[in-house]
Length: 284
Image: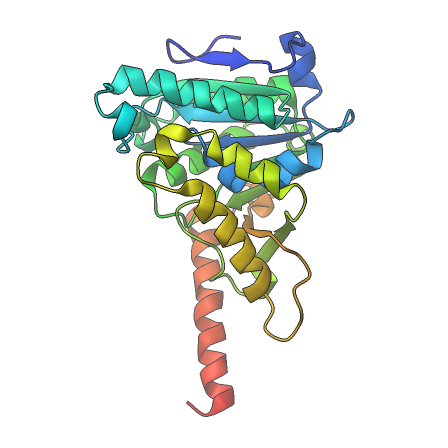
């Protein structure tokens, strides 16, 4: 498979030939940085873990050279060193999570934010053709990280280039740099990720360059999942011990006339109306 960027890699944890590993994919996670998939797409990883009929493939788009967490043993690492370390960590996560395959596309972050979508979109198209996934996990369109939103927008563009009968059945925008607890409940997709909490912790913990560098993503990810499980419902007992929220982006790949920005703003407007309605009910 030809990639847009020099140094791009395809890693197959169990050594299966590439064509088979890609064709058996049912769930795919497409994230900006090394460790994004393990934070936001655990639902897909969990659904495929220890299964022969469902397989998760990961796609990490950027090279990770802008990593700010360079302390301790990583203090003197230059950008190239960090790229190598973060890619090695992503491969470790793919092995632990028993992914079918893991792509490391090696794009600079500028490609994600560029108005020229071709380099990233072309890679997406090649990967989607090879995997034909049923379910896609990516960043939500209200995330506060420019790279995350840029890549999600380009992913929608790539999927829309396929005939409708060849598109994924579902695409979910998940949480990394902006939680989705602000969505009104009717807009929330709530994934129960209670099972195998040890594996979830392990998947994020293998990114030592991040966790030991001053950002405890391992603890924060588990804490957010647990908090969502408790605070999701105010008048009932906890039904899960771990919950991840997502924004359902499926309408954007079912109807090409829907503008992604307008679709996202509509979610914010429903929150605004919910607040106004509650003030009206309580006499505010």
